[in-house]
Amino acid sequence: MSRTTAPGTREARKQQTRQAMLDAALELLEEQSLSSLGLREVTRAVGITPAAFYRHFRDIPDLGVALVEQALGSLHDLVQVLLAEQDGPQQRIDTTVELIRQYVAEHPAHVRFVASERHGGVREVRQAIAGELDRFIEEVAGTLGADPGAELWSRDELRMLAGLFVDQMVGTACSFLSARLDEGPPADEVAQTARDRMRLVQLGRQHWLP
Amino acid sequence: MSRTTAPGTREARKQQTRQAMLDAALELLEEQSLSSLGLREVTRAVGITPAAFYRHFRDIPDLGVALVEQALGSLHDLVQVLLAEQDGPQQRIDTTVELIRQYVAEHPAHVRFVASERHGGVREVRQAIAGELDRFIEEVAGTLGADPGAELWSRDELRMLAGLFVDQMVGTACSFLSARLDEGPPADEVAQTARDRMRLVQLGRQHWLP
DNA sequence: CCGTAAGGCAAACGAGTGTTTACTCAACCT
DNA sequence: AGGTTGAGTAAACACTCGTTTGCCTTACGG
Image (cartoon, rainbow over all chains, first blue to last red):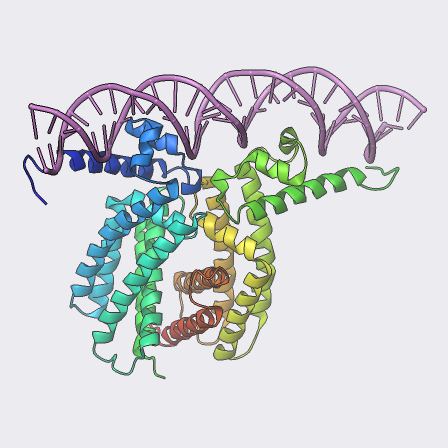
């Protein structure tokens, strides 16, 4: 543990090309899915030799799970901000939908990747995404449990509700993405539907008993 | 318009190998996604020459949309049966979830295919699935509109609610599928969560106003 | 009954694939 | 200052891939 010269010119360059590969892969994945992504394709896009790939990843699936961490890591921050909000229910719904729309506009490739591979053909990536989404559900459940009127909700019921919200948010993000490609209803309509759905769920929540 | 010999020994054999290709493709897709499925792979599994593929499909995407029609066609019947039921809400929820579980058990490959390719890398297939799901939503919306107490629901609100139900059903099917692969919670737990979610939505529906 | 239409075959094409091997050469650590 | 480490190179390996061409064979239809 010592340091004689400038720190990590070595490691810095490595992480740099590693990141370049992740970015290139994400871009290539806009028009195909992970199980058809070629190792050579990625290295070619970055401008390095195929063999150099193995210095960073074992597999394409391996690169895939790195991509998952990166994509859902950024989303993690957004959820934290969201849960900290303390407005009324209607206000909260509006800002949630608006934040999702904004996130999709800023990171469309990340969203597309997660949506595609969540049920895609690569087991390791599927599991990585499922694990990350479970973490979200747990966080949301925690926040929901702290809300007033949630005293008699069981742990399982809270997770059920949180899962409903998370699925709803993921679905909304997908719909915003489709809107960008003119494959579905326009973004404003998506937003309206999403708000209504969350209002309805919120209503059900308020009248939930046993 | 005449018929001198036995009808369609010709066409029958053609449809037979066509169906064999669809079945083979579906099986191959259990471990990869459509955009990585090879034309040669399919013909090899069926036992015919690569060139023979073109007698039936133009592309792999073309085969994909045929697969969509086949997969969601069978589901169509199930939904019809479901909507005809006239029990109380709780009863309806229970049989719905049970029917989904049963459907996934009988047609796991179909479910997996639709789940994978709904947000997958092949545009034509995505659109085919979206179109088919829209048909479901329309049907469900129609039935929901006929229920007592739905007089003051607007057409858009009905579609919003129907979409929520359909998404919920698709998500439940995916979860049952994950359970089969030991990638998620066990089937019984999935069923319980699904029922609770639908109960909650049902509750929200009953208290919906404007 | 015979000409035609069409599903399937055999073979070849150029191109792209993952992986291994031996190598260079610059940053690293002592 | 000099030996070691490791990111990236260059080339070759044995495949697989989609597509085209010409041909065979058989059910079809007038």
